[in-house]
Amino acid sequence: MIPDIRIEDYSYPLTEDRIAKYPLPERDSSKLLCYRDGVVDERVFIDLPELLPTGSLMIFNDTKVVPARLHFVRDSGANIEIFCLEPVNPPEYNVSFASTKSCIWKCVVGNAKRWKGDVIKLYNPEDSESVRKMDLKASLVSREGRTAMVEFTWESGDPFSRVLEICGSVPIPPYLNRETEEIDLERYQTLYARIRGSVAAPTAGLHFSDRVLDALDAKGIRRENVCLHVGAGTFLPVKSSRVSEHPMHREPFVVSLDLLKKILGNKGLLTAVGTTSVRTLESLYYVGVSCLEKGFPEDVGQWAPYEREYPWSTRESLEAIVSYLEKEGLRELKVGTRIIIVPGFRFRLVDAMVTNFHQPESTLILLISAFVGGDWRTIYDYALSHGFRFLSYGDSSLLFRRDIAFGL
Image (tube, rainbow, N blue to C red):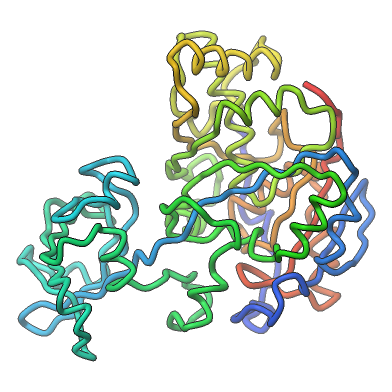
């Protein structure tokens, strides 16, 4: 049954002065709120390794933010902002980024009413020679509600990834209320970012420094990666009064066969770094159900966890994915998810998570509430009353699930 949840029940007073507009000088110097069994403790992020048991498995999202915001200008002088969301032709990220002449992306277009469909040129107010060499142009292919299909063409022969690096800017969250600055090029990216494709950072990972990662290794905490490309939908508020009316956006993710086997063999705590890692890991159960019932993996629907009871164990589900990949000679699972995690959700893999403090009335607050058994206000009241910084560049938390049970 789809949960009947009022989004207004997940609000709290977040004033502008509590939003961290810039990162701290050191990644690992942020505050760390630790929540376990209803008890809140306050530490510093560099203490994280000592709070996790030896033999734990920690899962990171190694997606990399691309400079996906582009500014164009019409011959009339009208400025058109194009925000790349995901590739359409070619549809694979790596193939699209390797394109050397043209590609089509699904985009959000700012000032769209002023764009009549004519070919527009990249805005180059500083007359940069490298930008001029690219000769990047955009053509409107079609419109679909708030988004559009846009074809990009360029003359330099560079791959599209290089075109974005030269011509684009990092799309920092709109709630920072400022333009992208030099510091964002480094700090709105995790140290372990590897696979290009996100238009927003998995911000829980921004706190990890080399010394924290080394300390995790030294304690015997195993580190593994998944990849979920974070879409622009992460910025979208829940506009309907009932969560059941809120549409979740699709996000593609990749999990290796090797990691699936390691999860099956894991006997310790499984900690997810960020809500994107949580959504990826918890989606795996429903991908496995698809393999069991249909013989192949399918995208995970928004309400799949709530529509019916499932007879399969978590182990059976993961083993079905492994079996499918091995039969097909594949080394990794590539699929998408629209899963929404709200109170009433049954967590099957994740025991603990590292996460920042999220916007009021957001789907991420719902996820936190589901994870801590509805006790999210204890966490947020403490953070508000103890000077914690909020949102992407804000402080962090380590949350333990109420009903932790090791094994599958």
